[in-house]
Length: 434
Image 1 (cartoon, rainbow, N blue to C red):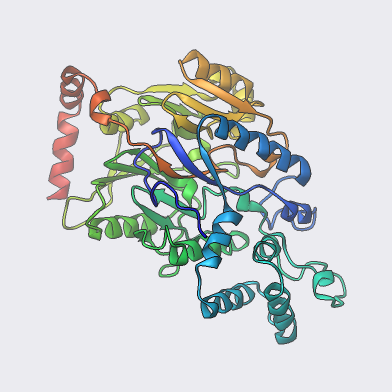
Image 2: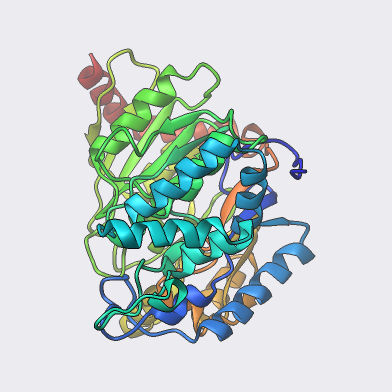
């Protein structure tokens, strides 16, 4: 029996009350991070995996206390497996073995047999934590691991994105994370509730990369997507084409925002996050190096048109009121801005408009949010934060309650003021489209 939830996917905003969210509790896969493979696995430190799990439990406890249905990835995978035909199950295990990088046919067979004989949950846990030579009863000269772990999987934001009533199946940039999408593809192909979900980007059909940390839904008409080290313009254009073809998709605009290529700025949500109707948390040391692109989905011929504007003007063009920008660490000093940006101080998850959750270690940013009228819930992320991601990274909303953007979009005077200020710019845009 699978668990029937409220509906498949409904995420038309960043801030609508969060009702259902997908998470992955970090587990033993983190125990395989070592000085020799840390860089390859995209970690800058070795984590205490048991403490990280307890910190994650604190995070999900707060979510439940605020009315959120917390869905664990393993549970979703077990539900999916129970709905699958035998041949599809065998094909999936073969796919995992093929993608593991193991080329020796005898070892491949041992991996297949090892996974096939485990319980369903045990099979998925083994796939995630990595299979060792001791699991298979074989001798290897040096390596303990036969298949690599997936320690980044607790960042459920990245391997797919909920967009409206559909999803974007990510094409991850780095090899160590590319295998993570095997699970999201399985769910959206076979799960009884989610298998009919529209797919706006198929990671198996293109090589252009896109990751969920770059995907934002500012309102029910506008997507904002980071052009980053991990998300390319080509993939954004493909998303635009797929959404344009989907009759049930309501979005009419995609805004691209460049993400400066810095080692601790992987995605757009590492320096800019929407936290309320008109409030945005950002890292001020990034805002001077911005570029924006607009794709008008109502046009037959799709184009990515570059815009020269400010962050405030870009946001105002979407939400139709002047935004309140809240700087990381309250812009107290460059040192504090750098430290709290490093520990993902922009990466708060919105539970409902004006209520967010994130790490307690970003003390000055928490205070800046509260000073701006945002309610903040915090938890200890001493170990989790070493993975370079916070509450938004560790969550993928599956269902948010709809909110009325028209009710908030401001008085007519605010809209008229905006149009007057940008009259020439709007005319130039129209000329370019023609």
